[in-house]
Length: 584
Image 1 (spheres, rainbow, N blue to C red):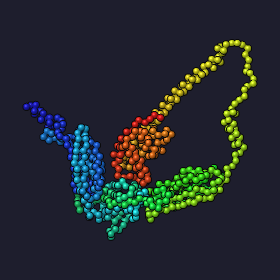
Image 2 (image 1 turned 120 degrees about the vertical axis):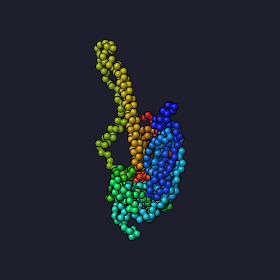
Image 3 (image 1 turned 180 degrees about the vertical axis):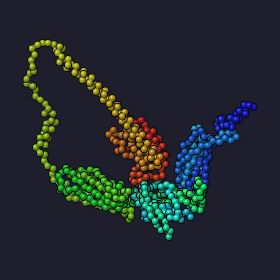
Image 4 (image 1 turned 90 degrees about the vertical axis):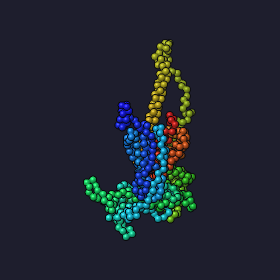
């Protein structure tokens, strides 16, 4: 009996591992089954007596925007039973009205498997009375929009002057069909009258670039905190004040129709230039000697995707050597998004002989989204005068003749010597001559020195290979660290640029030894992936990495709607699947 009393006492004090005999279970629920658009709710997964802490990502439900996760652990003892609970709480914001289902999931912790069911949540319309006090709008041009176009847009927040409100955070956007520019640090501010009511406003000028055609959406949201004067609450000191309410404003979620650049009427000279441009070409001079360079300059001025324009092709006309253009972009003043400015292409052309009489003709074309038509500038051939190259002077002629003689094998032959060498008056054996031993040991010493040099070269080469491998590993770790930091901060474009560098660094050992990592394109990497033994999943992720990195650069802004935490895990897994790099 004394023993039973002692055991009960230990159980009550929680000193025995009673939880080891308790059942493990998991459940999922929301704190409120019905919330308004813009309000914040929480989705909780509770696990009792879990053998560890699971690493669960936030759910993905269109219409609900999930944020970070918080963890809370508690221990309770009831009827001599010790229960430990772990709660994973995900906050979310309702972006549009409707009935939504947060799907259930199955996950494992150690040897235990847990399953939670679906959870339903209802999002209702924002209180109409609130719309009289504040509103958030995304203003786009009232015309057809096209893929690849850099579209000026304005995000405007309207507030009634008699409402006391403050921004809880900067606006953020949802949707992966657009590349968007960064918001300016300081918005434009002013006052305006809407429907007879006075409002103050804050406006952010941005640039959006559609990445695909069809009916797509771009929704901006902004949390604000305002005073609800219909309710009173008390502060820490017991003083009465208007209640503080938080609401998230969202822009219209109606789909936006994006069109493709039409194929009909597209000129052969079209190189994806979209906007409104003017083009002027000029020559550095019109008279020159054969073999001398001539500069052809093309200035393209206007607005649109001008910072991404490609130069026109001059072809391969006979009698000319044409080099790729040197490109320079000069943005217009006070244009942080670089939609306006001048893009200059400088071509170097060299006439090979005096028979050339005209410069190459070429054309530059663009698509005007305002009218939905193509425009083309045609630059005709320009007459030039090419004179023969000057004859070589006496010094050059002598140099050429000397090189010809040096390269002639017959000139290297010498006639036999007609005189005999010196005579000796003694018959001393040659073995007693120091010169003989010096001459005899010279090849042995030479071979020994050659062997030492060869061994030293091998050691240096091995050290160089090791240094190269260590440098590559350091560069790869640095690229992965930059990708991980960008993923943590939610910066998609820096993430994909760092991931692209990681792929280039990881695969360069399988490339030509003279090729630099940054010069590897997606077309170069595909055969290298096969050499490295990459599986289908790794190859697909490499394609995705390069495609999204180029899309982000083309759009001039940040890609949205990606789960970067999953992307960084996929990147590490794909790189780990590569085989051991060859020793070069």
